[in-house]
Length: 410
Image (cartoon, rainbow, N blue to C red; front, side, top):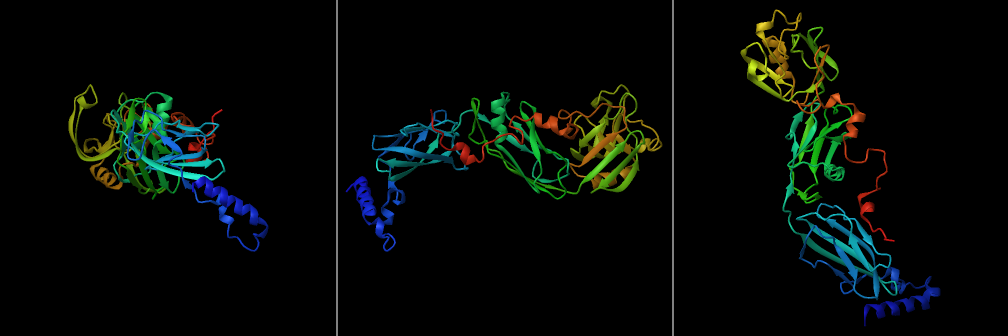
């Protein structure tokens, strides 16, 4: 007996005894809507068989083989749980993916069908896509570890991405989760670099997890590669405020002043940059020369307890040769100089990612992206404009599943 005949007989039974259902429900499960789904393998066709591989540049296609039934639903996901968008024809005879498949991925496709009597059928198929040729690799930064409240997250791409659509694809695949939750977002520093920061500094004690879901996703003519995930721990909120006009460096931990140090900053022509900077590195010894910054007056000095805040060579460091000017005048070539004892204390107190803010200088403002992390000098509205995705508050699909479900064509 065919599955259709079985369903018809069961349906007849249900109709005959319906008035007696209060006394006996033996045939209740014979109704088509409550019947166990039949295997719809003979009813549908794929452009990939179990165990086969398909080209991710081509759409996934599913069709009904004959007129005995129709497709009612299709759900396709990869091993990472990402949904594939699709479109079902109005008559239910064919379904076609409308979003790109990932390269080198395994997919599971679940198809629901219905025969002429309304009985439900099911079919599940698995397949792999062929590996990617050209890859778009992503490197997340910084390395896992403990950082200050000002530390941005970075994503470095192996190739330039310029179109808004491709940038949005990349950005949506980069995930940042924090405990406690904070408002934050990505911005494009250039065609190959993205930065993520919260609206305000990270909360002290927060944990931040960063991962990429770009692996296998098509971006232009390339497919995304895998990336090593990160876990950051945020330490105490340590802030250093250099007042170039008052010649002081004030250090605060979690809002409380813990020390004020007399300093000297950049002299006229070498004025220290104003604005918020993030500590990039700590170097117990650095050889500083006039050639390294293009200074006209020659110098070649061994420098100890140097805390770097720009890639071009701005540090907070020991400057025993200028102790007479510290707290009174600005005589450096742009760095913040202090006594050896104070520099050692500062070096031991701060960590990478802590914040250094310069005020009261005649220097230019710290730039956002080309000389270290000047990210905090960009106001939040402008930062969000550097994103390629829909800003928070705009309309988006309710869930990933909803956005990938069937959409009948017209």
